[in-house]
Image 1: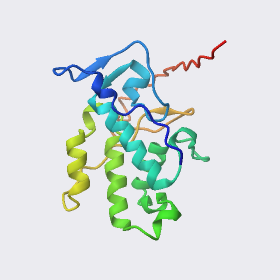
Image 2: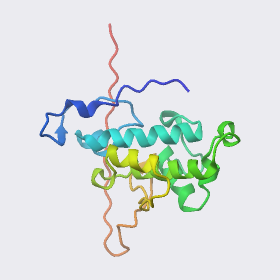
Image 3: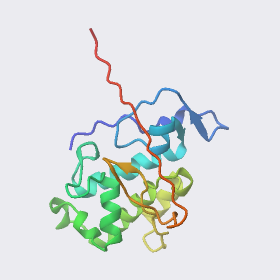
Length: 182
């Protein structure tokens, strides 16, 4: 894996009393950006947490988030990991290269923590001190992660927050611009 992430630490853009930042220019590595930042330009201290969760999933699976896709469902790495977790197949996410040299129980806990870090809504993600506590204390219980609700590659994964009678649909667009020198 070639480390090329420069997005971490963007939370340092804040002033001492700020907890959220809004920008008109979204910069970052697609796949590591939190949904609220990628779609609305809203950046908070929880945006770095989202990228950290993606990074944990990459390390465990041995797959890159920016090029990952699940062939049968067109899911991103977070959506695929949640589905495997929900179907009690999370151990299948572990890269065979590391499986023999690790504690499966500890890796499953890391997957659980990563899924908490990649929650769609920033207020549902843990903050970094809580992530550190969860990683260093393997006896504490963890909340259950919620399913992702983002529309990715043309398919929607429904959240447990929506009910059958109260369901709305929306289609958002994201424009990615790549600048080239003359």
